[in-house]
Length: 334
Image 1 (cartoon, rainbow, N blue to C red):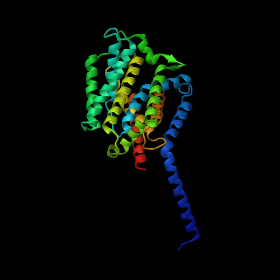
Image 2: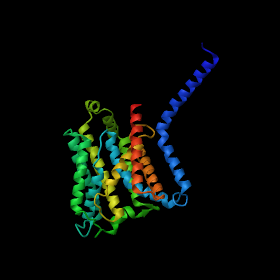
Image 3: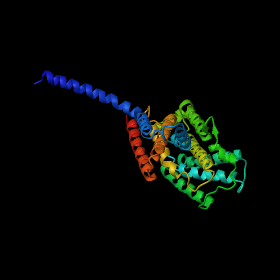
Image 4: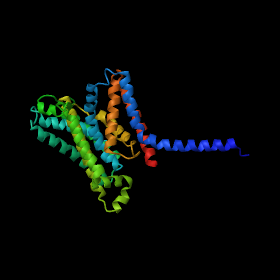
């Protein structure tokens, strides 16, 4: 028997169901941004004298810059539904290559030429990845894992498992460590990369084609788009970004260290996948990757103030990546 109470309960349940369904997209779209705000507030409240300071905020921007550049390169490839897992190894190799070129103890080339050669070297290695994947039909996952191992081995071979720090000119060190308008130079370098790739992905015709490839590669090819060329171009951009990040890190360290980029591979992908959960869930964007990189760096900086071991920080970063991938996958399904 249908009563007034039954009808009222059913109506209340329907309203709650609609509210829940309306809330889910909002959480999927803005959940990470809200988490960033909450995390910032938590660190500021618990460590106000150490975290909520101009020096710390500048340090977050500085330290996030190489990660952002690397993650932006990964984002370009992810847009086309491919992976470049070689960027960590290539970062270290390109940093070493550039230091060897610029060091007076080795080749002693002018700084501008050495930096240009380093970026071109990274783009060329990306070209190799792109050709193997786009034209030979190899899996990007397998190829880039193999190339990462190759890059790591080449880096160790060049350095002979030691650190190169002699003969590095101060001008090269200033690329990352110098300041302009109160911020480290590498912040502005990362900003330039961000603006260029934002324009490429979101304002240019090539960017629209890249997103189309990620949506349906075969349909995009049948529409007349040169898919292999664009895939190769995307991997070249990823390689160039890895080189820029390697130059920034080696400049900041005033040295070339063996396998210096291995620790940035996971955070770079975590930043990209975190960014894909914002605004348009499941869609990789340059600005989303920016917020993802800043969020990860903010977490790393905040946790370091509590003197937590590096293993705990890595566990947290890994957990964030898993959650971001799951949210991104749910966004794509919707």
